[in-house]
Image (tube, rainbow, N blue to C red; front, side, top):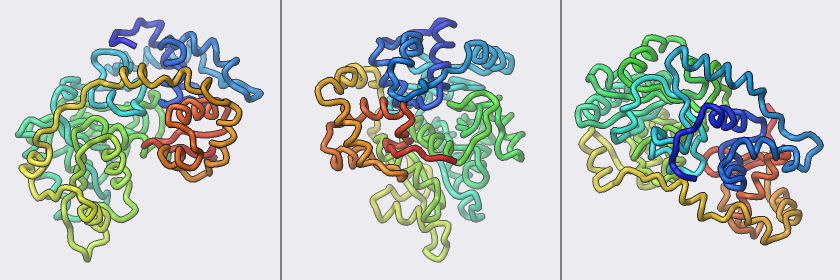
Length: 373
């Protein structure tokens, strides 16, 4: 797949495919690799690709055309993975969103990015630390990316805007779905002076399972992730784990051992995360880091995923994977150890299982048996 702009017809086909039930980013890339990155060919072949009684049903073309028209009316662009405007850093991750919707100033993608995440119920000290570091990073030419949530996220975004810097808000819902509601004015400011990003359809309301998906985008857009206050079971720790798997720098602000809100971030420091007290520490941690290149296409082309299954018994591979899977997500590396299959075979077989509704690829390079809400 070469870097190129999509025609209107191709964009509709890409959107129909990724909006199809049981097709996530990983399965999307597997299928596109198999069919020469022609989304319409994949759509036409779906009935033959599934072993289940009912093939996945793509949304009607008219529905996607209406979504694109509605997006254009409010100044939203839908950008595909193969297009030159797609952010290089995000394209570098394994489960990059095939398409993203963006609203605002796209020059934010051109600056080196730092993700800042943390507690929603942050302390006054944590909020001040987030403001100070975000402000100084903005002054140094970095764009700060976060999830527009209450607490640390909101403080980081607002500090960048007050410093006349740039910030990126990544939403778990649609690019027009403001959450929390009290951040409506912040959302508008980010549109005017930064960028809002989402992989979800316009108008989509986020569910709990969508926030880890959002977190992988936050980390994927950046050189590193800074955690400011996180409890032991905080979603911010998921962001840091994903960032580490993506080859990003993981950093944390130390906190009092008497405050449960910092137990998780202090734990990261014990595990080797960079200790951060100010923006200068962040810049030093990133010293020598090159902006991730867009190697996604090369990885896909060289992976041999389209022919991997033919090298081994497809039926046997399915059975071995299903035996190793459970409702609890498992890392693909651990799945390889448990099943004895190679990574290319695992990814290709998972794509088939996902199409049949027998497995689910999760964010952060994990998979599980189907989870019902």
